[in-house]
Image (tube, rainbow, N blue to C red; front, side, top):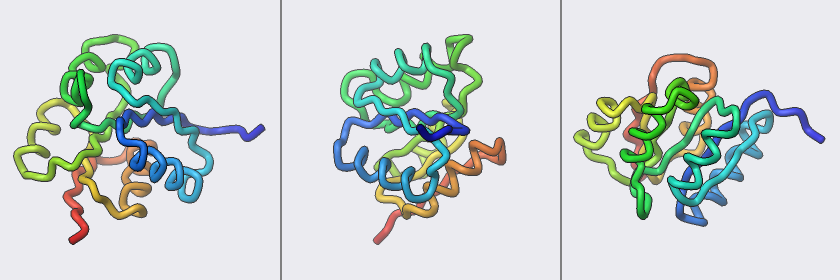
Length: 138
């Protein structure tokens, strides 16, 4: 059994994006345990019971969206300390500004460069500066 040093939760409703994230963690972040939730509601339940070092949160979720989930995370003593990286197809400057104001530690847009996402995760896990990346692949 592998010993993980950190634990990250990815809240994402798209199966293809989830599969890609699994691949990224296996290849670039093998010492990090990736937990998964396909809805914000399930992700919030996991966040309340698991010791997490970082949450990757899709913004455009059905039901409770990423901003509403972020409000819940910040309102709870158990989760308000966990940095949250927004991972979203919403790529306008206004989207990134809304994420900043909402308390996200970072924001990266889909589609993203795999290595840039891995570096953003490493940076946030190390407690370094906030990461807001607009990196559309054209």
